[in-house]
Every structure is written in C-alpha cells, then in structure tokens.
Length: 337
Image (tube, rainbow, N blue to C red; front, side):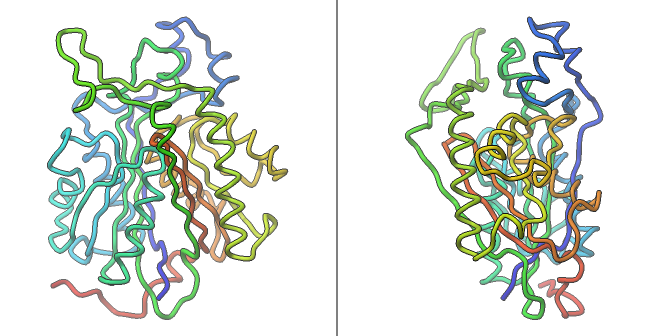
C-alpha cells in the first residue's frame, strides 16, 4: 500500500502586521528584524477568529483539491499548540463538526513546530488499518501566546493553517517513502509556554506567553536539520541532487541559510515563504507545501523533503514523491459507513 497526499489547502488571516508596525511599538526597526530573521510581515487572526475556524478553511480547500467529500474521511488529526480550548474538546472534533465529517475519528497532536510531520506519519500508519482518506491539519494562533512586548520573539510569529488529504493506493507507487521522528527532552526548557499544571500562575500579572532561548534553538535547528535530511536520503538511496525541493519549517531564514551552507546545498533548493508569513509553528510546513504546489515549484513526480524542528525539543522529516491527482485510487468512491 502506498500513501499519497492528494490535496492541499491553506488559510491566512486577512490582517497583515508589518515590521514597521511592530517597530512603532518596540525598540526595533524593519531593517533589524529582516536582517536577523528574513521576515518582513506576518498574518494575525481577528479577535473573533480561532484556530479551529482557520483549520476549517484550510481543510475545505484541501478537500476540494483532492476531490474528497467530508463524509468520506475516516480520520482528522490537527497538529496545534494553540487549541481553541486549553484541554478539551479537541480542535479536531470542532473541525469535524463544522465540516460534517461524521465518519472521521478525531484527535489533536502536540509536537510544536514539528507537529505536522508527526501528524502525517501518525495518519500514514492509521491508513494501513482504515483506508478511508485522512485529513491532516496544522493550525496555529501564535499571536495569542506571544509576548508582544518581547522584541526577540513577537517579531517571529504569525497565524495560519494548512491542510492535506492523505489517501491510500495499491495502484500508484510513490507518495510518502520514508520518515524520521525524533525528540530530545533535555532541551525542553529552550522553548516554553509558561503556565499549565507545572507552573501555575495567578493574579493580574499572570503570563502564559512563549519564552524562547533563541541562540540555543538556532544551533539545535541547524544541527538536527542536517541529521534528518541526510538520514532520509541515506534510507532511500537518494542524493541531494535528486531532490527537487526541500520544505523546511519556516522558523527563520537565517537558519535555512546556515543549513544550506553547512550541507553545501544550493539555497534555491529550499522553499521559503516566511518573508511574508513568519513562523506559524505547526502550520508552516503545510502552508508552504500548498504554496509550492500552487506556484508550480513542485511538479508531478518530484522528490521532496519536509523537515521540522521545534519545542520539546522535537524534530523530524518526511521524504515523498509528489503525484497529486495522479495518485487517486482506482476506486470510484470511498465507503461512507
């Protein structure tokens, strides 16, 4: 059985916050932000917008792209660190209800910026037991958890959602070939959102915002990116020359540039969109994938790698051949009961 991504979709909130707007409130400049991050603007959700609402919009686009009806879905996984509710219900259940995906099992997965990679592999494994199409979403409202007075972190993040439809095929080889999922809990304090059961806060000064040790995270990201990408290629017997595109977690352009130098890979191999979107955590890879496909950066038959890294610390990657609609199963319809 081969598991393919047969549809993609993404959603970005309407409001755009530029570096100049941030510089008017913080001790920073557009030039400083761009030179350190490669980011010029980011999208921020409206006050009445939620993670689930963004996820639904990306999901509908992905389902339309794949030609799959909501009731055909057997699984919905939402990768997020900013769920609508602190504990439950899951964002995936909210998405299921809005879509009318009445036959889908649902759960959220939290692996920070690597969440979409983890969720893809979880869905791939579950498809082997239930061949109904699966919907995998990365969605984040990072604007709700950043400290907008901290110029070192708030400049990085934006809100977004991206989604893909996975389908199993016995007829068309390719799709997801290999995956690597890893974690290093010794670095758990490098990126932390305060609060929760371990660090309860109370009073008017209560802060549940993201705190990050930037330099240590930068060094970690460059190191593990090399490890994951080389590992994927070694497992498959491919070389860098075989890759049409690498889609990294869109954390910081300087990380990607450092990876390219370290691995001696042309920077053009990496697809980057963080200049106008910023770091949208678990949403960054599916949004970038959708944009790369829509812009024809990725074409049928291309070998692509997706690599993520983030809080936990977590990291991982996927190696796949893109077939899109060519990978649609021969079945006329999926079961609906």
